[in-house]
Each structure stands twice: as C-alpha cells, then as structure tokens.
Length: 322
Image 1: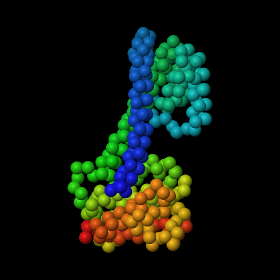
Image 2 (image 1 turned 90 degrees about the vertical axis):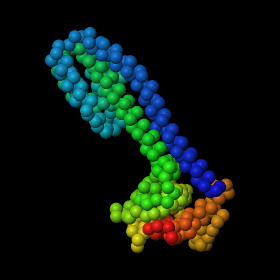
Image 3 (image 1 turned 45 degrees about the vertical axis):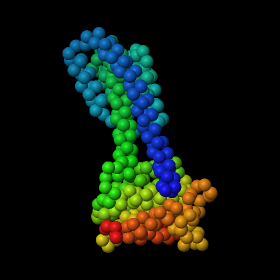
C-alpha cells in the first residue's frame, strides 16, 4: 500500500504540474480576450463612421477572409521580429495610433508586406488606419480563441488520460490493447520525462492482439517500469518501448541506455525491500509488486538483463490471466 501511495504521489504531482500550465494559459488568454473584444468593438465603430462604398466593403471583407483562413508560417524569432519592424514602419506611415501593437497582431495572423500593399490598393488612404486597426483586432481575437481552444483541448486530454489510466467506472478485468495503457502512463509521467529531456521511442507491433487482464494492475506495472527507467537515465537519455506478439499473448520490452544494474545485485532486483536508490527515495517494493502482478496474477513472465548502456525489462503476458 505504501508503494502504491508513493507512485500515486509521483503521478499526482506531475499531473498537477501538467494541468496547471494549460489552465494558466487559458486564463491569461481569456483575460486578454476581454480587452481585445472591447477594442474590436471600437474599431468596428470607427470603420463604420467612414461609410465605405459597397465595393470597398466587399473587397475588405474578402481580403479579411483570406487572411483569417491562413496559417501563419513558422519563422525564426529574428525573421518574425524583422517583419514586425518593417510592417510597423508601414503602419506608422499610414497614421495608425499604435502601429507596433497592430503589426505584432497582424504578423501573428500571417499578414505580410505583400498583404499591406494589396490592402493599400483596395482602400483609399483615409480608410487605411481604421481598416487596419479593425483587421489587427480581428486577428488578435482569432489567435486568442485558438489559444484557448488548444489549452482547453490539452486539459481535456489530461483528464481523459487519468480516466484511462485509472479505468474509472469500468470492470477490473477487461479485454484491452496494452498500448493504450502504456500511452496513458507515459502521459501521466510526461513531466518527469521532459524534465530530463528523455527521448521515448515507441516501437509498437501493429498486429498486437487484445488480451484479457487486470487493467488497473497492469497500469501499475507500466508506471513502475517507466518511472524506474526515468530515474536511472541521465539527462537526454533514451527509453525504448517495444511490443511484439508472443504465442497467444504479448511481449513488451522496456529498454533504457542508463548506466545499468551491477551484476552483483541483478539476481536480487525483484526481492521485496531491496532497492538501489538512496535512503528515503524508494521502498524497495515497486519491482516486487510488479513481479507479483505479472507472474502471480496474470501467469506471465518478467525478467531483466543489464549491462552498461543497455538495461531491458521484459514483460510477457498471456492472452488471459491463468
């Protein structure tokens, strides 16, 4: 039970951190949206006062539609800064009250100097400041909406991951694709993985059959093995997860390029209360529990091979618990 609580604490801390980032970004975008919507209303009123001709309004509407449907190209920070500076000079010449802020919003929306020339061709000079301010407000709002949508989607994915991981409201024994459980576990441990810049390679067999298993227990297996690998790896290390068909069941290898387990202690690795971690960092029960879940509860097999630069935990699971 203590080992389960330790694992739960690790997952909860990482999950809270992962959830906080998109939640904070969504709040920031929503606050900026309030100000941007108020500014957009003022820009609409200023544009309406110009009483543009019908052809000009149609041209402006079509032009704005083209810009809104465009994806801003990926550019370096320096190239983006140069474009904002050049566009700001153009907008300042048009008489915009805040040309640099408008230039930033326009460039973020994919606006270019060619677009500025096209806009200058379809509108008379007196209409350019109000029309450009209106367009920059529209693009700023579009960007903020996109940001809120992306961050909210990230939150929804995280919540779905924890539901998949815990298999809430589902039977403990199910027919499952083990890739789903491994992926959910990786998402739950994503903070720890990214903190050490670890590269995760998933070499999944495309024809892997479904197996019947205790899904909550298997997720604890994946958690212990992945968390141990992350703890053993140096910054920038690599974790390879490889699945394959084995008889009527499946086999999963967790391979890392860490320092390895010394040959003198390798035979004891699955003993209860045996740990290679420093005092206070481990209970020595994680691999013992993992072994019991795989071997005793599922009738599978778990063993490890290790040498410097290559440690492999091999999990074999039958098609159903024996």
